[in-house]
Image (tube, rainbow, N blue to C red; front, top):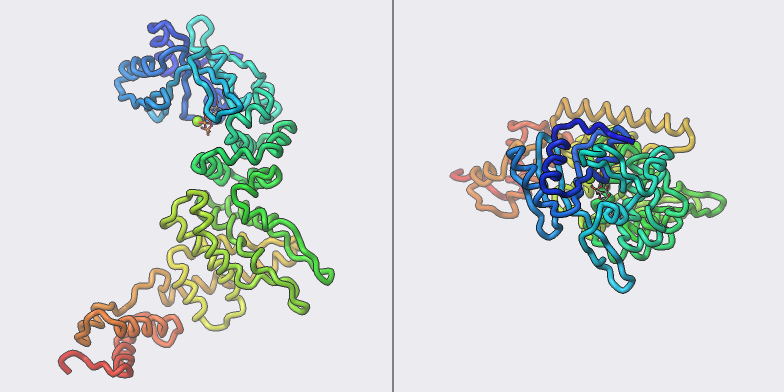
Length: 467
Ligand code: ATP
Ligand code: MG
């Protein structure tokens, strides 16, 4: 196979490498994606010799800066939306007694041997004499055609050398919608414990790529089946299985979670909404209870689940700020919308709007995605109920504008009116007004709130300043 590689950038790299009398190749992901006709802006160039020197020469022709990563021996330039990384070809040999390989300079063939998968080990030549010709030592092209993830060496060797590759195998299978070669899969099953030597940051980066795919369950189910998930997020593996009592079984919560996750992913790219879907039922195993009359219940799994989020995020080294709070909030509130079906008054709706705030739409998306059942009639009935709640939310929000609730009377106004400094009473009055608005006792406006403030203050024995 021969690629035209018409882009000016490849010509320039080719010329500059020739001037330095070294061979250069396009390698890895770009080659794979080029053949798959997937657009890609990341270009990896491997040079037999000093990659930094060639990068510097190319950068000076293009008149762009070059960033060097001395520790990795790589250099990067950015040009017209392209990210081009240069690296010297390396030869790696692993020894069983050490995690760190011995790394030496090598040929492009050596470099291809240390790649993770056959489809990632292909290279296009940038030499004048065979410009664009594919070098494919492990038949990656064939595997691309067969949509197969296969390791270039014996999978036990490839995975043991760098166990992160086990998750990468699944990530590529999920992303490209490929299958994992059988031997590779059974090797992963054998080698899951090797994951211990991999840093959490690298694992989580791959996990995030799986979460960002169109149908994340594809990757997560493979992780579960291979035994990797039990090591990374054991709380999710616990959702597996169905218990039966008095002939009654409960929902298979892992399969359900996968369905909810895919439902959300189908409608939204928001990675944290996807995490909320993945974790929404994580409190179920520890709240599971069987009652002769009510059957299986998971009371409080929303609350318990939301309390589990921080430790999961901490272990996975996911961000602990806004993102985590958002996921916690959605997990905690995920049952609330549907619980409103039987609520006659508007106050429950107002409270939900208040608690969800600006995340109300995301919460509703999660709640809708959570409606799964093997019985189409049940799904239809629940969806109808869901629509009723959706409508109510819109009506109440139009009327009362609770979603971005700002108290009509601030703490400052209360303090000024009664000549108070910050104290418990100010909070009490403020809360009382808020509760009255949410309960619908008064409207969300200054006048009614002012009256309520005076009344509550009097009850507390506080009188107006100067009165
Ligand atoms: P994408 O950028 O879409 O994630 P990619 O194939 O470019 O896909 P990268 O992680 O950017 O993946 O890696 C670039 C290339 O480096 C890969 O195609 C592969 O050849 C090689 N590579 C990356 N990580 C490893 C690894 N852990 N073991 C062996 N080779 C690897
Ligand atoms: Mg890449």
